[in-house]
Length: 541
Image (spheres, one colour):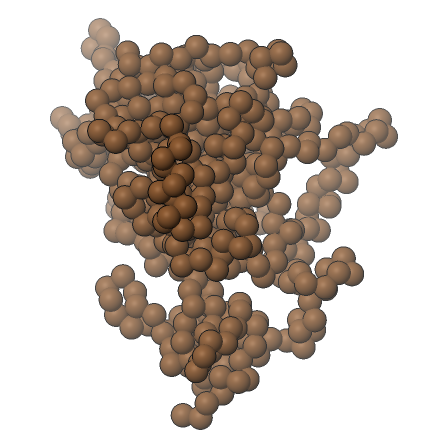
């Protein structure tokens, strides 16, 4: 085959050889993001189309299929944006999104003729591309018309990192082209002969009670009372605190490429997944060394050893507010411990995509989970939250470091965030949109928590137990919209004789029991020593 590697430029697309999860060869289509010359050959940085960016990598010419080379369009050769060179041109999807945003802004502009101030404080964020699909609409619950829009989650993009349970945890709801909510079922296969609600006819009644085996139970849902909190998902005023929602309009070719080769953190070496804005001089190092206690980054092992002789920290700065066994949580104020918070954000950015990271960490609190041994408290993961959130967010950004993933620590972080909300007397929800892995973890946590409540309900006077959506929300501190979307995702809601009922099938009960047997790590509220602060009083900042 003739050597056409000299013809390949940035923006070209062609199949690239890679190994899949079964260690089999495959040739997915990839885009060339960068080309670099090293003595004797060229290397190409490729992004696999429709795959997660964490799989992007440098490849050699022998892995490229030159026969199917696609050159970029001529108008894309000189990318210009706002009259400035150096940024990649807008894609059609971004143009559509931009036009929709402009249309939405014009429709919701203040009527008084004043321009409201734009919040300036921003930190990190996780986002997920929304896929627009059409499916069957779901009837909304009484008293929750606004929730049917606020509880819509984006569909997860297919990734080669998919595991067997991925299909079981894919989100239920998605957006149709007219903005209404639709449903996709993956957890429970549709049963033969079962029909969705028409008008609560006899077919529905027969099917509901046929499902009631001795292992199953039916719970009646009482109409939810109108809650006092704003649940339409639309803030009444601009947010004056930090936001983790990313603005992708500043993307360029640099931020689309991983820039750190390897990170040594304590006894672990980590391969970053995404770009992180470390100093340019650090990007050429084979290994970036981090102090695992203060997270300061250093150029060499000798620099790290010299730093450790002077670093007195053996745990994250801040107050230890929880300890049980070897697991501890530390609360860190982004204003009082600015250097640590910024270093934590830089490290987290290596594993969280679609985030905008600024150095103003003042509006945030960071809760760092650690594991203790004789050498000190080693960071396992963390989540951040705003000191003041106008939209009831109890998590802004959440991460379990790769060496500790798939061991139950992610759910432990989520459970701890809701325990804090219980102490504060609030319901909370994570800032959306969630990342793909974050959405899987939250869906699983919500499902297990709500099923735990429903299965513990006791019947009174021989009647089926009753509970409202608001009662579930108050018990768990999970926001009402998330409760409704989870019940719909699990396909538990049925309509019978003018009221909504929850039917727990035998498969649901057995699956829940198996999942809870595997869940060994739990938060003990008795070990939590936390006093919430009123951050509306600026003097406490």
